[in-house]
Image (cartoon, rainbow, N blue to C red; front, side, top):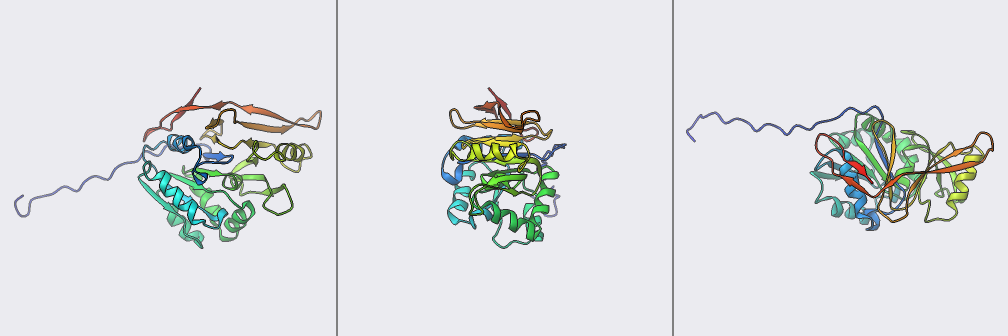
Length: 265
């Protein structure tokens, strides 16, 4: 190349960002990469993101930033993502806002629901992540990381059995994970809804990812045979709580950089 020749700069890769009317959430009942189980669930999260190689951030607050879970995050998603990062312990709201810039997916690990909610509310991280969800970032989480996004949840993290706790309210209604693996949860959740201690909501088995899409519609992906997700509501006439299954899909088509993947039967 001769001296002084013009060298055009490479154009940055453009990313298509669709507009959504409702924050998108994937709430997982239990399992997944932090337990080295259900690898199809992470494939489903990638497909639902609408990015062939998304940028993913992990938050481990609920497990007190357990280094094992953080390591498993990098191990599982490195082959699938363009960039991976985890939120540093002790991050402020301002640091979290900077960290979340440019992410396609935020994944919140499980652990202690009340610790997670209290920390996010006291630091202002809750509002930062709500704003990220409202601009189109796909939020995902397992167990406590699923509970936190709802208005309310059923949790045993208070040390006095299963109790109603308040979430950050990104999604209306209540949530109950581990619905099939902890026998005390179904009767406790339905009783809490029947008595109006909890608002109507969703119950999610382990190995199941419940997708709330950009239109606010729900669909379930099951990585385990027979596992599912359920709407639970109070019947106005009888005063009892009743469950209705959300169709559990076991297959999906991959997403592209212009559209999320789709569930199939």
